[in-house]
Length: 183
Image (spheres, rainbow, N blue to C red):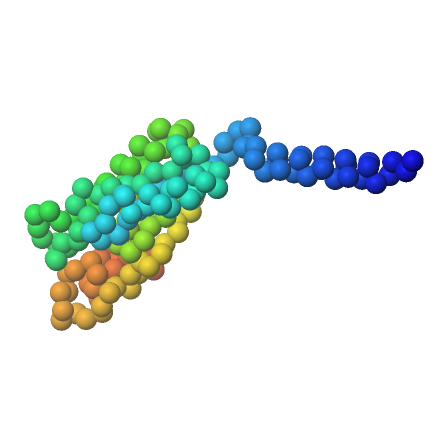
């Protein structure tokens, strides 16, 4: 009786079972950095719920996935003037900074990954450039961020954070030497 085909099948099955087990077994330690998702203008943290579920289903630990929920998610018409129920770029910087500090304290991590869309991307950029975020952020991933504005017209809403020629984006897009010289 030739036992070679039986041994090959047994060895193949054992190898397949080992590979499947390795794929299903989480790592012994948690090397994952916490991620903070940052929503855009007028949105909420709920926007990121399906994304968080996807990350979880791919093995990312739930306690490492966070979404900031800005108190007033809509931008002011004029970034320099108070407007009820709306936030400035500095309001978002402060809230994002507090969220990052809270996530770092809760997880014991040294740095976070920030993922943002739309206005959230500019909040991330502002935090990294002007709010101490450079020391606390390992990676920043931006999607659909109006880095150079939604419009660039000095005659139309000149102090809106969405005006590419306005003071917020002009300062944020200035070379680093120019940014530090004006502070």
